[in-house]
Length: 49
Length: 161
Image 1: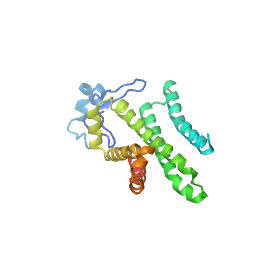
Image 2: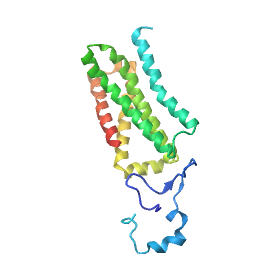
Image 3: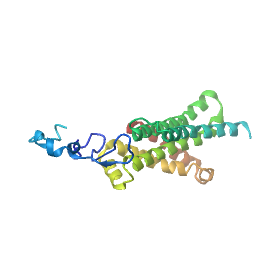
Image 4: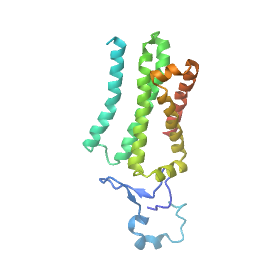
């Protein structure tokens, strides 16, 4: 997930986990930024969401 | 209690039934996987339904040649406003976690939320002028014109959807 790019109808900056109440900040690539970021190198994430 | 009063009491009571059902579902955690979305969807539709019913009064009046329907119009309209307010409260309270800045930002960014905001804002003067006292204070001509805005609110509500 990319908290910086919006879904057409809503912001993706916060999310709610199923079964929990209350929202949390969305983590870049769902928390796996360190492991996965280089796979997305050079890609415009606004175009390829 | 005369017959009209009885039927109006029935309308008022039954208008609250969907809310009770919703609260029951909240209590029993029966709102599904995306509970906030489900509640928003339900209250939104309920608001539209009651608005539509209130607008149905005029053609019903003409069609059945009975003026009694008018006795229910205010209750139906106010329930439309009521469920819209609940809808908004759920959005700000749960989807935006009580963040006013986040709510305003979302409204700013999304056309469909702007439409919804206008619709609910438009309903406020309608709700305020719905009391007997207000109806008497306003001239019938202007009250009628003001309340024609209900049609606009209903259209905006559908566009917001």
